Length: 270
Image 1 (tube, one colour):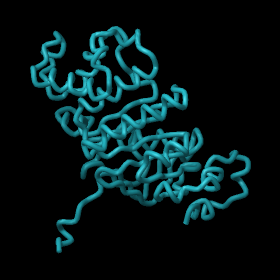
Image 2 (spheres, one colour):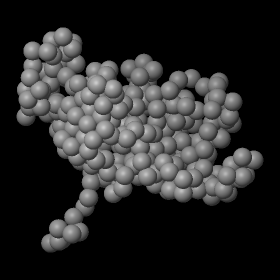
Image 3 (cartoon, helix red, strand yellow):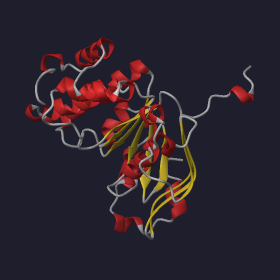
Image 4 (cartoon, one colour):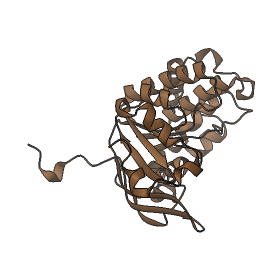
């Protein structure tokens, strides 16, 4: 039996966390732990705290109070000078993807390896053969190999989404965060895109945290669902237990939520 000192630590851990914007509390989380290779889908209305949670895990925000630990370190340390590897270990796919429109698909994907390549090489487009091979392999994996040299500005929304996924995979991160990655796609394309994304992540045993608005997609692709309401975790459990009633509760109009106590919200799905 492994000793307690050898116990596997969570990949992401939040403790007694509060995130305030002026006088508004965007997040109030007592304890949250995410393990390696979990596929966590975070659901909730707009303004429920999903994006704030992702930004805290990425190290783009500093909590007002409490502690955030990602891969056994403060994620803010990964954004300081001289700590590039720490920053690279967490990849982020934003809702708008933030690709470089004038560059080709493969050049956008190669930006995912910038932390491993000398700056002057990337500026002139001189990437090591090993990195070029990785990019080509990943483009085949996401079915974009035939478009490698197309400029991103000529792509459809679904193709841009797959380019963003490929760039995140190129980063070789331990944690991938995705903030509403399929919000601009129609339902059929959204499901296909998530299917591809989740399969790529599963093969690599990477931890995935996805912010989403569609409970049906979360039930299909998540290993765990977290529901947020007014910055509080009101559901945390397996997708098969996230019922239609729980989804209706989570997405009810804010004015209806006023009649439910905070303690009541914390017991959803219990």
